[in-house]
Amino acid sequence: MLKDSSEKTEELELDPENYVTEEESFDYFNSDIRLLAIKILLESCAQGKTVFTLEQFLKGEYWKIDEISWELQDTGDYGSAEDLVMQQIISILETLNLGKVKRISVTHISELLQETVRDIMSMGTEDAANDDIVDHYTGVIEEIFNLKKLHEKRLKTEYAGQYPLMPKNGIDLDKYFQRQLSYISKIAAPFIEFEVSFIDERAKEIEKELETYINSFSQDEFIGDLSPYLDKRFYFSKQLSNFFDYISKLPHINGAINIPFSTLGDANFEIVKMLSYLEMKKLITVKRWNDVDVWNVTFHNAPITLESLTSNPSSMETEKLKTVLSFDEARSILRIGEFKIKLQKNSDQFHLFRIIFEDPSEISKEWFFSEIAEKYDISRNITDKKFYNAAYQVSQKIIRDTDFKDVLTTTSQSVQINPKYLS
Image (cartoon, rainbow, N blue to C red; front, side):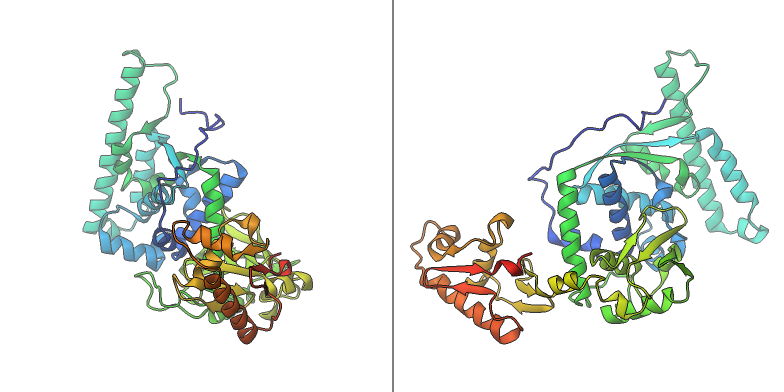
């Protein structure tokens, strides 16, 4: 029989040598289809779910989505949209170091040929005579027979030539045969099952990286960083406006709206990013990212207006978001609410905040310039004045460019961030 999905899975630890670059993470976050797969995997990881079917990742008609059709035509490496999605899921887990695929199985092999025949017979005569369709179904049938041969071989080996009374109706595949699902995945998506061992620590890291990405996306920092299939990307404010125009036409009950998966193909807004942003700001709750028919979304501000999509229900939370301070090391940007202060990369100012924000538990303490100098380079005799000047210059920038006058407290020997800007 197939492995019991309730079996306790192997606990994996984060491998520090398996380094994930910012570019690799960005490529997955920047694509709505891939981002959706990440959201589903993170949600399942948090819920302790480790067994999936391919069908769970197919939201709507993927073959009608520009990104999918573009990749299918451009690479020629996939037998179907479903095959492309399956390979993306495996790639996300491995490339982002989120977990490992313990097994991929095909269940109900004996029914697949019947499903194929039904699929062919449901087509019109003209479609059935199309060369591309003939080639596709030839590939499907060939893969089914290869699976049946492998299945029978495994049964003979496992039962020493004695055919069991209750043979298992499925098979676990090795790496080679996983690539034999290229064509069959279109029909067999509900029967393709894979089990994952998640790396919990890495899942938490990805959550934080994703939050940083969505925050930057909402400030139009990636307006020009298009995926190849996109002709253009609307500014965030325009996307939000287009999204509101769309949902305003949908029925809602007590603030809950069912959003169809077909929005994945809408060129006017990026639905996964829109929902992720609103969810991050606590303006909505997505009941389940891995839902079956629609996304059931509850909007917390009533009535639902364009303004309500930019204001938190709690004025206290709103003020908090307006004043929170953070440092984006990758882009060398100091953020205070909606204000962004660009620091020159690798400058004294950059290294000052890089060191202060290195350990979250120590950000709010009083930092002596001698300590910062030591962390910067213990082998060099660096004077305190180097970082005193840096702290003073940033303090003046904050006072000049924002509404806040008390963010940094500096003395001749130390600097400290006002705690009210850190919580």
